[in-house]
Amino acid sequence: MKTFADNRIVSIFFKAGAAVFAAVLVVSMCLASLNAPIVKADSEIMVSLNSNSSNLGPGDIVLVDVLASKLPGITEFGPIKFCFDADKAEYVSLEMGKELVNYLHNELQPENGEITITVMDKMMNTGTDGNPDDESSASFYSDDQVVLFTIALRLFPDCRGEVNCWLGELGEFKTVDTTVAAKIGSGLKLPIVRTGPSSDATIAQLKVRGTSISPEFNPNITEYHCSVERSVTEVQINVLASNRWAAVVITGNQQFVLGDNAVKIDVTAQDGINHMCYTIHVIRRESNIPENSSLVDVEGKTYTFLDVPEDVNVPEGFYLTTKTINGYSVPAYMKDGVASVLLYLFDGTKSPGLYFYNINSKTVIPYELDKTVIKESGILKVVDVPAGMVIPDEFKPATYDTGTIVLNGYENEAGEFICYLADDSGNRDFYYYEKSTGAISRYRFADKKAELLYSYLFDVFLVIAIIEAVIVTIAVYIIRRMVSDRTNPRPKRV
Image 1: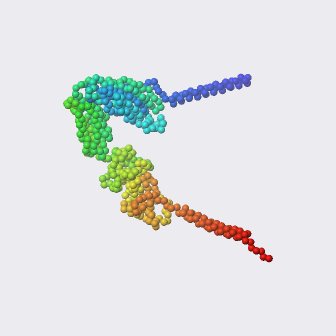
Image 2: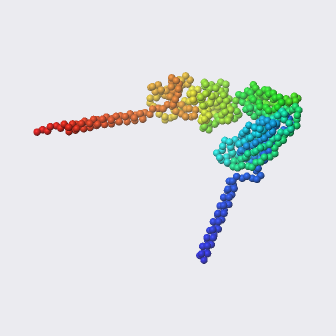
Image 3: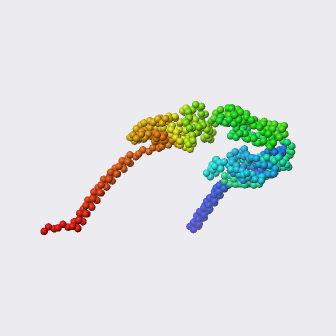
């Protein structure tokens, strides 16, 4: 009976152990499936070509879109090899699809009708510390067709028949943790149907250097708007006519006034009959400061950029320029050799004024004419000596007129003048001002305690040395006397 009960207990324990093992195995498999890259069968990307260009003839621009059937969180793709008939057209330019603004592309110079392009997400290019869950690594996702990039080709003057475009290879389409399958789709045949002079007076591309136009460019839209800073008085207009022989004349892109400036782009078709005029309204802002621009210093305090008044008192040696700070292009005063720049800011409480801003340390200190020392290598400002700091007795409160500012500090009997200053990184210390040259350098007080200790030790060792010398002298005298007594003994009395 007991044996049967024992066997039954063993059987129960064995079944329970097997159940636990099975449960652990199932959970492990589930977790493994969750962590493993998932590549669905229907996630394959089809890449093909398309063009809306029609009625093509010699000298025309052809825009060819490279399309992906979907883009499921792709962080990089390529190299994609785009091929075309090199004896009938030439490569002009490449532009990323408007939905892929966060991607960077690299193109190899076309050779024998082949262009090789690789593309990477900007965030992945700068790195995300390998964390696939980082929001910055979440690339563009679409289940719909996406234009990867558009290639512009120019047809040769003697182009006849048709121009073929196709994809030679695709490379890989990668997400954060896997590779998505991709295959080459349809190519493109572009028939040349026009043989006479072109009547096309449109432009294929329009860009204003340093700014963006609105609305988005379309050859059939003839009026656009953009804005530039107050300091900008002219802009460079990049125009690509749809036909090689169309005449393009640009006027009004120089000597801007404040406010609205109309830039005209007149295009006359090859046939000399058809004509189109595009207008860009360039708004030259009255302020040099971008809207809502500000900076935050190392302590978290916010300063707002303001236009510099005409009567502002700028220290000698500083010149006005434009500097990109905190992502904003703002007016700034600089001096060669000085790391800090001088900005006109408002801290939200005091009156607006000039401040020194150190780009490296992100420190902001106000410029005060009577308290600021400008060195060749940096900015120093007179500040109060911290409470409790002991000044050696030989230094007495004093002032010194440098000819530019009056420094408050301390002077000793030897004429050494020191003052307490803060640099543009926020570090504070005593500085020695050389009156004859105007040079400033950090100053360190002599350690009187150590000097006194060394004096005491010297005296002690001197006394010890004298005592040792006396002892040695006495010992030598005694030894010589003993030797003399042995060699020349005195006669004994009888």
